[in-house]
Image: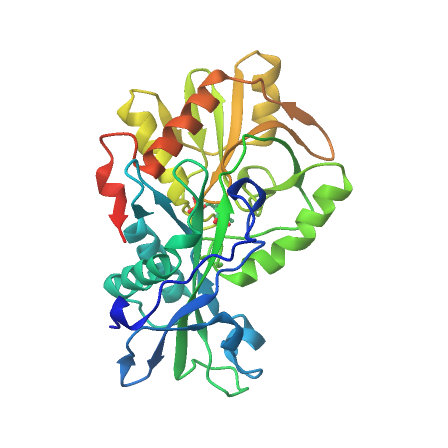
Length: 348
Ligand SMILES: Cc1ncc(COP(=O)(O)O)c(C=O)c1O
């Protein structure tokens, strides 16, 4: 694998936006970190190239058949200003399981983490000060052999791009429960982080926006239970228990979801994986047993959900100060200012 000494640290241009103006995914950092996998040869060494020179063949399986899986993880500055990755091992494991589902090569954890560390080190100058943002890393594994036939490709590429991002602001959203379209079904690719799931879900997002909502709430294939939002896992409080849909192979196993369940359990907060039937939630609301709801993910951290609307009903969720407390605690863990979860950070 390449060492950092071969690369110069990319310098942030003087007119680069302030962290609060970066938003998410709008400004791409200048380098791509990449490695190639060939059948029979395995993985090449990692190398970096300017983003402007990165190319992908028109006839690749990645472009033509969606043979592409990816991850989204962040690098933060810790209390002393040094940078670390948040839970890269868990992201490596999820990329491995996504790749297995699409019959793509295994990316060793060490290669994945080294690629993330190299990309973060190259762009350290772009990483906002502690508390004000992050580097969002997007490692993508795709079939890049120049061949049009539909089959397992002989060459694949792992390529990692970086976008410096603002710290996400607290937000409240309304969701539209989609009853015509489905995102996933048992046996499908719902648990894989693959572009096809997002492509299949885009119309759902558009339909939600047309109905005045901010995002889509996907239901299971039977259209009764909540699965997840467009890019977030869901939590709903029932009585004193936080409930989240189980990992049944149809939803993305979110790293934020897992972090929050760990934090809640460690604090003695009751959290359960269980089905969330929309009609049951409406009944619980009438009985006064329905508490707050939120969505969570790497990009947005925690977003309060005020309501979930559907063709037949609207379920409203009260505000709960516990949501803001959880969001602040998660931010401290991600930034490494909360003691007790040091194993979640990996120095770059
Ligand atoms: C469909 C979907 N579900 C859930 C999540 C949350 O996952 P994570 O917490 O690992 O970012 C994401 C975010 O990437 C997503 O795209």
